[in-house]
Image (cartoon, rainbow, N blue to C red):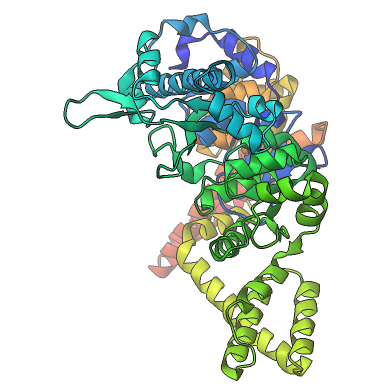
Length: 602
């Protein structure tokens, strides 16, 4: 598939991107020595084992083994074929690919491209109708009265869908947009009685919804009259899935990264109002409970999450659930102090931007303080039974706190409030903690046997010859002179099959006149297993130089290994002869073993 693009063009694209910038859009990276580390996006983990090398332009996860260069990362994270990953990075670096303009793309990709193009066109059309036409005046006045400024309207590309059955349909038809795609993504609907398409959004203020790259993939529409539903979102399709979209992410991402913090709202109006109030790191779920996918997306971009949901019963319940999901994805969660009866937009309108920042967002409470208040709600703590159940529920939540100092703080608070013996409360906490810990260990054993075995296998010490081959390969990938010496001395006689293959490719790579470049070399390895192993080896930390003695020792380990295997086989033959009481044969084999061992020493 990649053969349509020349190797030179692929190299130009690869050399034009920095893998740190590419991966940094998906994973929050922190400097550690010469590399950067983060939580692996390809498997769940609590401790970062995902390493990125700016020098080698490679990544490798020491947990699950994922690895490669910028192309392979985009392929893995986006589910792209190689050609699509090249196109993706070419677009990023403004490198034209005329050789692909007339080539066929997959049906799925051409469909999605057409759907996005239709959405982008509709977004511009709706925005034009709101800003520049008589039809949009009522909607524009409504927004201005609600406190929306011209800057907000333009920044978030707000628009207006007129109270008409076919304004958008005709507009798209005139521009030769495939209308069946527009029906599939929910911009248009089909009449039952004659099959004619019509505008799905009518008399609504339109809010474009973007993917993480800033492409319009859907809409939310707020009705101007009293019709129901009040808010209408795009329906789920190949293009739009509200369970893995965060409204405003592409705009909030720079500030999220800068602060290592995100403010999570319930809807797009809250994000826009907060943006006006100076909170530029806000995102929102689309009126639904936060999902695991959305939590993962947040964690890739920021560690701390401030949840700012309404304080009504539904909002409190959603906050409690959001805390659980975010914490399960290793987020540090706080809760904004939004007063009851206000949503963020209402509060900002009444009290202003500064109070919203200082009294709501910055004056946040810990997730544990929120949980204690939430669990208290609707309970009569004068009643002994309800009081005991409340204490038990709070203790159960305290067990999930990772820091002992936090656990101690809330245990003391609980003991003081209800005049309980601190020792007794600590004993109960210890019992619940052990109970939960035991359950988690049991679940881990049942749910993740393959991962556990893989980790265990990786932790085993490798034999000396195996280490020698890995270290030699690592040096060979960065030094053509060492590769030449190895080729001259032992050729391709490595003992590990995969290393034999990698060495053969490496010799061929240098024979073409290429300079050492591990990322470029790994790009040539079309076998995914070989590419993964080569990446892992290239990411190894090895000495800058290799002495003659070290080289000699590694050669000896590699070339001696087959002889060691033969000696072990002879030892087994000798034992078999002895067990058959053929002592003459056993003696001859023993003499042969002595001779082989002498040869091995010399």
